[in-house]
Image: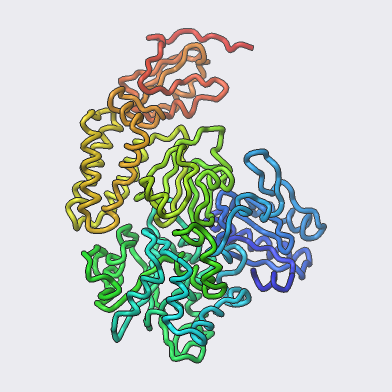
Length: 621
C-alpha cells in the first residue's frame, strides 16, 4: 500500500499500468488533482499505481481506505466521484463492477470474485503502491529480506531455503530455482553474472511487464538475493524495448535503490557489492531462451547454442551465470521473509506456490491473475474469469503461450500444475492462458500459433527452420479448403521430428498446438479436409454469403458496403450476391442491420436464393 494508506489517509489510487495509460489514466490523474484542489479536499491524496490486474475494467481507480473499486473511469467521471463520493460520502454506483453472471454491482474490490479467489504473492503489491516511490516499497518491508540474508545468512543457507521452499522457475520448464542457484554457486570463477529474463514475447502475455511496471523493487531485491547466493557482483535485467514504461520504472528503481545503499558497494554494511544493468532487447521471441538471451547481451545476434556447457559453467562472456524469470525473482523476497515452510505449504506436492496467468480470449473477465498451483482450470475460467460471454459454449483453452497446447472441455477439471499440464500435452510455460469459444476455428488457431513460432525461429537448426515452414504450409492449405487426408499423418510426423531434432525450446515446443489439436479436435480437421467445411465459419475461403429472400428489405446497405460491387438490386428488391465476384470479406454480413438479419454466413451448405432480384416480402408486424 502507499504511504497514504499506511497512515489511513483517504486516497485515490489510479492505475497507471500500460493498459490504463492507453485509456488516458494520466489525464484522469491530472483531473483528480485539479478537482480535489478546487473542492478544497486537502485531506485526500491522489497517487498512481501499477497494474491492478483487472485490465478488462480499466481505467481503474480505487478509493482507500474504503476499497471502493471504480471501473471504466473517464476524465468526465472525475468531478462526480469527487463531489458525490469524496465530498458527500455517496459512492458513484454506476461505475461499480458488474458481475457478468447476474449483473450485481459490487463496490469493494475484495468482494469481486476476480480478486477474492486469487492468492497474490508475486503480485502482492501491484495496484497498491506507487512503483515510482521506493518509500512505498520499504513501508511494506521492502529490502528487509535482502538485509536479512546479508546480515544473518550465508549464501548456502539462502540456497537451502529456496530449495526447501520448492520454488520452481516460473519462466517455462519449471526447473528447481534452488538447484539452479546451487549449480552456479559450486562453479569457481572470478566473475559471475546474475540475469533476470524479462524478455516476455508470448502473444497476449503481460505478466512480467505488469510486475516490473507495478513493483520493480521486488524484482531488484530478488535479483540481489540470488546474486548474493551464487556469488555474482554484476546483474542484468533483459527487457524487450517494446516495454518502455517497464524500462523506465526499472531504471528509476535501480537509481533509487543505489541512492539508498540497497545496490552498489558494501550493501547494508556487508562486503557484498552488486551493480545491475538494464539491457533492452529488440523483440526477438527466441531471446527468451537462455543462451540466445546472453548472446544478445553480448551484442551478438540472438541465437541459441548447444549445451553443455550450461550457463552455470560458461554463460555471459564465458563466465558462470544464472538466469531466472521475473516472477521467480519476485517470489524470492517473500520466501526469505515468511520462510520456506510457509511457501512449501501452498500448491501441490511437486508444484509449490502460485502461478501468474494473463487470462485472455473469449472470457468475461480478462486480465492478470495469480492463483495457487493445483487450482482447476474450470475455477479459473468460470469463477475468476466469469465464464464465456454472450452465452457461447466453451471450446478450448490454451496454456503456455504459442508453445502450449489446446485442451478441450473434458480437461476443465485438470489441476493447473507443471506435471498435470505436461501430461495433457500442454505446458505451464510463462503464463499465457487463452480461452476459446464455439466460434473459434481450432485449425485456424493451430495455424496462427505455428505462424508465430515459425516467423520467430532464428533459423539456426534445420528441423525448426524448415520443418515449421512445412507444417505451416500444410495448415494454410487445409484452412483454404485444399487439404488432403494424408496431410494429417504428415503433420504429426513433422511435429514429432521437429520436437526431437530442434536445438532449443522454441523448436522443441512449437508443434504443441498442432499435436494437441490433432489429438483432441480431429473432427474439425476432417471437416476441413473431407467436407471442405469450417464448422466455426472462420476460414474465409470456405465461407459463402447469401442474402435471404424472406428477410431482405432492400435497404441497399450491403451493396453500398461491398468493396468489389458484388451485390446488385434496386431499392425494395431482394438483393443478390454474385458468388464469382465475392471476396469473402464479410463486410455485407457485418453491415446488415440486426433487425433484418438477412445475410447468411455458411460453410459447406447451399442456400436457395433467387437468381435475379425480386420484390421484397414486407416484415411481419
